Image (cartoon, rainbow, N blue to C red; front, side, top):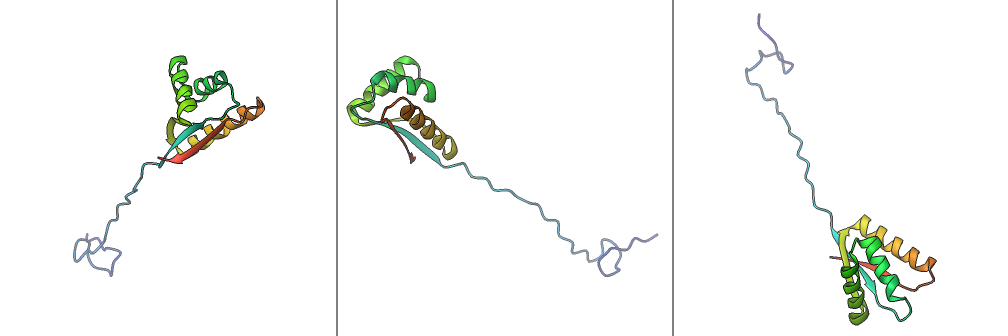
Length: 111
């Protein structure tokens, strides 16, 4: 018994020009953003340490060192994250600062 292909009624394997396509998915690493705290003359140092411990998972010594860097240099990098995470951290820090009556600024920049 001879099997006919779907292409022009010719037997299978004879002048078969079928193409099998493989789908390739190209992925890219997400762009990263640095999250920075900015110095001001009003936010208490203890509050900045609290923010660094709570939102950036710093231990007390690392948070204190980073707070001093913010104080002395005007700003400090707290972490580098994908866009959505960086944006969320900026929002959470800013909201908590405002709820506590502090003008602390947290910003993100493309790394």
